[in-house]
Length: 231
Image 1 (tube, rainbow, N blue to C red):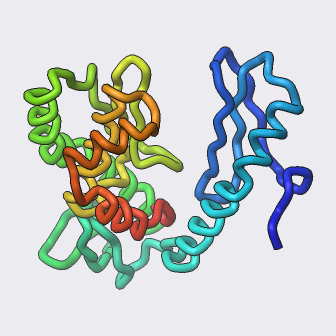
Image 2: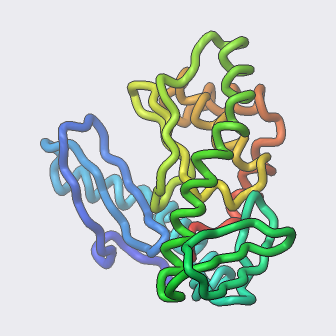
């Protein structure tokens, strides 16, 4: 049964922005960002027009939740790194550290209750180390052809986006990208680079994206198979 705006629960954030935008978070929450002068009627109309889009994203996130159950961070569990599955091995030790060891991710810890936090720290650390190595050639190629590059690149934990580009040409990458294959990381980087030229998702934006990555749709589809859940 399709939802209508009246039955939709959402959070409203008003600021000095110029347009109304909608964000669907992986946990199903809907956040509406609107200009301070936006009326309830204007917000209602945008939501009405985007209900199909909201339902689509909620359904996709729900499917991902079922496909990728919440991690318990116990030995034997499978975890991702650059698109490959590794088996988690946890053991008590006098130090806290995480290491890649062939097909295993070994976690040594003084207390097994902190395994999840150690894994989060390790993913962030590895992302900050490896993501720049992967995206730098992409950035340099883009710079040489289109004569523009990001003002800065930041790798950080992001709840619902794989990447973002600000109006000041600052690009942020989700540290969880370290779980996905390099081709997916490249796709996210190129997507954000295209926003340096077209700060929208217009036809020109997608034409540029296709010019640089003819197989971007396949890469995007592959990226969607990697859930943002469980880490």
